[in-house]
Amino acid sequence: MHNPNSARHPVVTATAIGDPQDAYDYDYYVRRLEDTWLVEKSIAVRIMRMPFLAVPVGGARRGGYYPVPCICFGLAVRDLLREHAGFPDLRLHWSQDPETSDVVEWGEKPPRLWGNDDDTTLGRFYGYSETAIAAFTRRRHPTTPSSAMPEPCSPTAP
Image 1: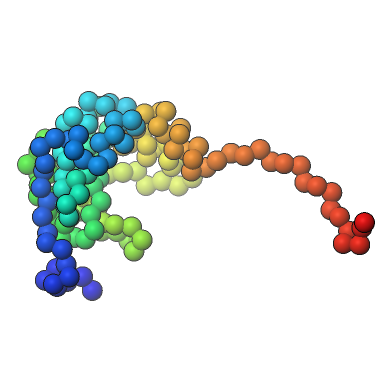
Image 2: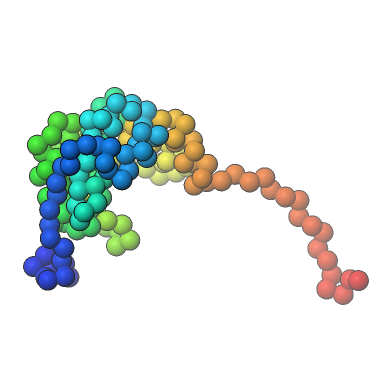
């Protein structure tokens, strides 16, 4: 059970650091967003000593999210982002999957998807470039040519 009063629970803080370029994932977004000007309007949010970007909505980007380790940090990040433009409709989304973290979301709600086009649709929703989406899709769903099946050999064949 989650206990924020436990001595083992990290101190809950969320701080906006001055320069988006100091965030660990700055280059990631510069290389992948369609509207790269959003990176300069991003907030580098530091929790547990690690700054990561919260990228606002704008241009092709209709929504965003910031993963958090627990609800305590989620509330702190949500409250921090309320002070900045570009983060409408802030909400905390509790993860249904224990393998994934909770997230602070903003902007439009992400589409609920089924099928093969999920990565492309979500990539466009989050404002990634077509080049970045195609590269991600190729890595996630590699297409390898099928090879001809060899003739079956009898276990007694020489």
